[in-house]
Length: 309
Image (tube, rainbow, N blue to C red; front, side, top):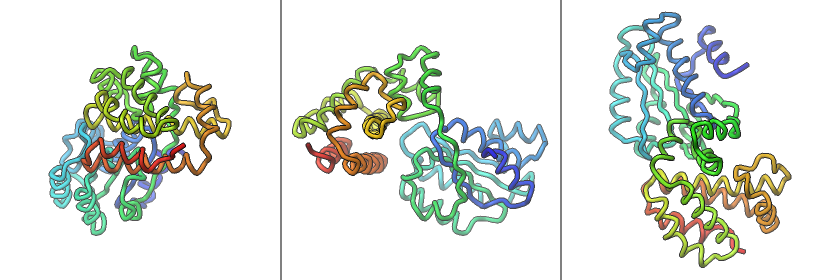
């Protein structure tokens, strides 16, 4: 049974939860299913009503998203005010928050209060590709819907069809599975130069600890804003995923397809616990960047607290 059918069954059996957390790496699929579920709850089969949801002008529906690095507190406050009102056209109100991990701590706390005492017949649908960055107390108040992993190779091919080179497409696939976001990033910066700087820095993490600290300056010259810095962290995480995949013999799943020989050398240098430590450091760095910690300090902490050879 797929995710859409599971939610449809819950609706028809009158077993709706007050909050759903959609988790997975296929952001586009999660968004499509969230809209379809909202249309089902608010409209059933009323096509005019469904169109209002699609166009985001249904009075009982609200969709919150941002192209920035964080969802602002005032966006959440506006949402809470809206959802505390009674339904206008139907029996329910539905809200969707895309990239829920982008909420600030204050925003998460506002939503937490809302989830603890939700207004009657109000449904929350939270979407996240990085659920590990969300408060445990929010996890515990949601019904989790897990989406099957996207085929990243297919996404890379899709970006190549858009005219993006394979190395850059692979880099983008570590950060996003949304076509529009990928194309926007590709127009924003010289991603081939960023990729080169990232791979150089990863090499230094293995072999020259002191130089890795110094090279942060050059890395941040390429990753000059918060979104590019988050892309950089995702790409570094992808690098260590490739090291892990190589170590367990899953070389057919490498993100950096042109680095097969190098990955074999790196895999021999680290044990499983050391690779896991790097994952933990990168996850912590994501949180710090989203909390507006100085990026130089964030990347320095990866070097200082990570694995030294």
